[in-house]
Length: 240
Image 1 (cartoon, helix red, strand yellow):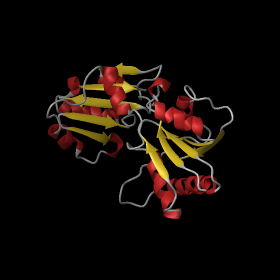
Image 2 (image 1 turned 45 degrees about the horizontal axis):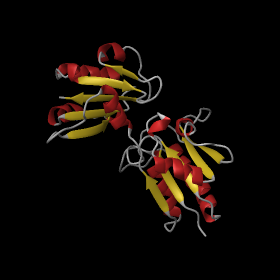
Image 3 (image 1 turned 45 degrees about the vertical axis):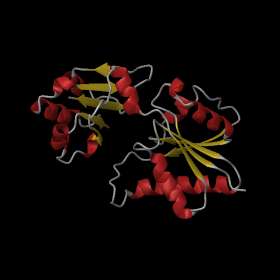
């Protein structure tokens, strides 16, 4: 019998924001494949879930996924594609041996998650394999909670944009939507702050670093924040 593959959102950082379902399925699965951004680094997803789920007796296999841009409709970087294929092959072997496998991922799997690239690669190899996606608390929602403001109300329109892919359309986006959530801002803070200044939106913007984590920071002075490179887990909410 084939094992079950679960892609599980473990939330933005606070272990208490993991869902009951996520914790139950992680406890159930004997094998965890955990993603990490740096080959010699630690898995952030693993550090989060370990705050709520015992790791004793689990087979934990770390998978390195290079931090490189992925543009939809274009061929991915060969190193990134190789990482997806290696992960899919290792996961498939466990599933075909009848073993349930969990792939924990930060936040919600539906939002800029490596988990779906792995799923797509896995299904290319074996379309019959069963996959279940378990949603989680997103960093977007956690950031809004940290600020103490809604993302949208009534007939507000909201858009989520990966700021590192800014291609000249961000000015139009900021003008067109009531709320703009900018993710992955840590490397483009100067450009974002300059644009917000030009559009007179600087006082409508707030930066949240490491939302929900013990060292979370909410920063309203984005000019000062731009002088220090924010943490990788940083989000700007612009609410007009």
